[in-house]
Amino acid sequence: MQLSTPSFNAYGASFPGAPSIVIGFNDSCAFGFTNGGRDVRDYYEIKFKDDTQKEYWYNKQWQKTTFRIDTIFLKNRAPFIDSVAYTVFGPVMYDKNYGGDKNKSNKSYAVRWKAHDPSNELTIFTKLNRAKNYEDYSAAVTDLRTPGQNCAFASKNGDIAIRAQGEWPAKWKGQGDFLMPGFDSSYQWQGMIPQNEVPFQYNPERGFVSSANQKPTDTTYPYYLGRRYTPYRGILVNRLLTEMNNVTLQDMMDLQTNNYNVFAEMALPVFMKNIKDSALETTEKEYFNMLKNWNLQNEVGSKGATVFEILWNDFSDAIFKDEFAKAPSPINRPVESTLLEAVLKDSAFKFIDNIETTRKETLADIVTTAFKNTVDSLVILNKEGKLDWEKFKGTRVSHLTKLDVFSRLNLPIGGGTLNINATRNDHGPSWRMIVSLTQQTEAYGIYPGGQSGNPGSKYYDMFIDQWVAGKYYLLWLMTRAEENDKRVKWRMSFNKS
Image (cartoon, rainbow, N blue to C red):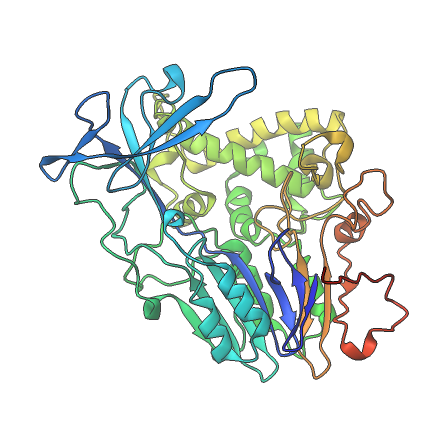
């Protein structure tokens, strides 16, 4: 979308109904966002005095509850009256009435969510559309409260910046990772991180800023950021940008669609060192060679990428499944970076041993067993014709109804969850954009869709094949002098009544 007024001219991607460009550029600068990934929603157990929920125990006395009453009208039935109890923490989201027999404990939980607080996020985009310099960017981004985002910026005068912007609860380590008691103020949020202590960079010495959802600070940062930040895409982005000189638009296109698996670069040596190839049968050796000779690219046609993906999952299962077998559900296992770091540091990592056997397994035992299990799966995939990475991954662009007939299925695209080209089965980069802030701005972009919402239109999915191929379209920031350009297809005029 392009917005042009007497005071500014902006182009980029937006949300339906939003009166601003959300990710894009104007005549002076460019701006973009990645998810901040911070936890701004916590749950507290509430103790009600009785089933009326009119009072709850807080700070050694019974406090009055407030209620929000909603009337839901139903066709040919009496209206349904829905009431939500509100506490000092927020609304009671789960109680004995929620989910029927699922909540057998009859406990009640209130939710404290930053999105419940008043704010005006549209202000940031209104200001960014008009921004001309770093000072304008700084004044705009602080209006963003939730959802928190990493806000990247560049201007024609050479300034660059990034800010992990949001109104973040100032938490101690581990606060909010699990359900917390709501019987007093001990576990409440005590305040928000001051805006002058939000992580940011401005014209860093290295010459670039980046975000691929990696952790935005090092261990010296005094506030707790949460538990899950996958580092691998960020590692590769930073590596490649550090190596680049005299960067071209094509360089940046290649970067955005990069399929190199830096996680596999780090993890594969663990497998190669510990798989007991002398214990492998003929078929197993064939798949072992696919893994051994893989070029670490999650690209179309790659079989090694599929072997590695399944092997890592089987390896993680072999490490953790025995200890987690009796864990309550749902519960998250340690993420891939935690496991990889553990086995790289300590080949006797305590979780390696299978507690369900009498012998003490070694890392080589576990890796070899996992590989044999992987081969069983690979043989089946090969028979089904799904051994190539893109066929195994099965990336799709789904219609909102999730109906296959309106969707594009089994797209021949590389990438993966831990790749810069972060495509997986049902998710991927929804807006690729590159802006060259030269005197005459030059920009390119693409999204996996089309110009029409009508599945019968030839414009319905017109961009998807280009998106799959890593191609871009020129983004024309039309000026007043170009209003009669031959590229203008049609006009709409509005008259006051």
